[in-house]
Image (cartoon, rainbow over all chains, first blue to last red; front, side):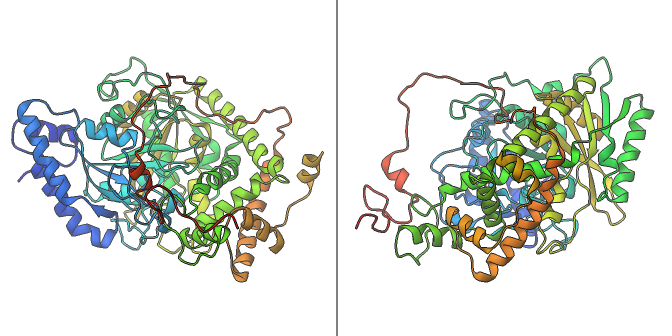
Length: 476
Length: 105
């Protein structure tokens, strides 16, 4: 059997000329999952029988000419997305035995266009982490080397695409949770503009930052997925009402003038930046210049403030969002309960992992009456300053490029017991999250140990069409 | 006023403060973990202290990141979660209600 697993477009062509069926495709991916998942731990659950049955139904639809535009796409879902009558756990003990009562909007739209969902993917607990070591179901391993982390928090989703266990994964990106693991695993990872995709059915972490994101092997698969899942939704009043462009067609539309590109001086001079990543980024800048692109260095002195701003705001929002896990309506309840207060306290103490508790504590602290202005309000003000400065940059440039991460995939356990050091993994991804702007990570070679290096491209609000076209161009 | 004072006064999280915050968070920590949590929070607070280098006296807090304001729709009856489904994931329930330990003496 021949399967063209590298792009959805080639699969679609093969399906059309009858050399490939959805049944073949599902069998192909199930076999790879079977071979690789025991050592990589990317999938928490595989919907084997369901995917096979669905493949048959969709093959029939293809025969009848009634199939949706994602027929032939095999997708994995991060364990934070509601999928009706399937388990959902945010990789936490807290949601033990929880089953979704409904499909989240993005999931519903995938299914409506006949994508096949093959399984549920491991992640950092409640999407909090940068290494996928915080899962209640064990760490995810990077396929490049199983002593290496895949990045986080959407580590399982990145590894699933990296290892060819599915074609596309949906993850979530609050401060880099799609882009950073995409960089560590050598795949494409997109965080769209905040509000581009409905958050209905996405487990809430920090609601003013959370974005569903897409992992794929290339820009075209990312574009067609985004085109299906983005757009207005009655169930999310914050989602953008803007029309969804036809991203997959716009990918091939050449603009008459070359985009103007900036790179931020402070990113390349950043203390913790690995020399090989710096060299790869500089080489990319030089290559772009030689191809006739206008590339300029810009100052962005606020860069170093993005990460502390981010940590104050996300912990505040997380402490609020996670107050719903009280042991009453769903999920885990401690058996060691005597009264109402001990039910809350024992349930939360036994149900949440360490990093989640740390963030709830910090968030509660920055929101407490005595410290609210000094920390929470201060961070909201700095957020505006950062947003204004970034808006200003995009009046002059189309894209800002930088490394996606300061290091390549590090060894499992390297940052055990550390907090701030691990937070620094998100140094370059967080500014787009603070401003709510779209950004994509694409592969940019490897280091001496063959570990992937990522290049991040940031764009202005709702410029995903241009961002994807440029990413596509750079990957050719 | 307080804001000005706090700006200059570096906060140190001690065991007492950890106990206050953990009660507000409905979390419990062992004596050993309280010390570790205080150390962690102090490390993080030392690090975020750098925000005070920026003058934000003329900046308004950014509270909404979406450009949408009041997306209105008609209030129509829709398929809501039926009773049995809403109770489906409850750790303790009867046919109609979530069950908790006794609240009223």
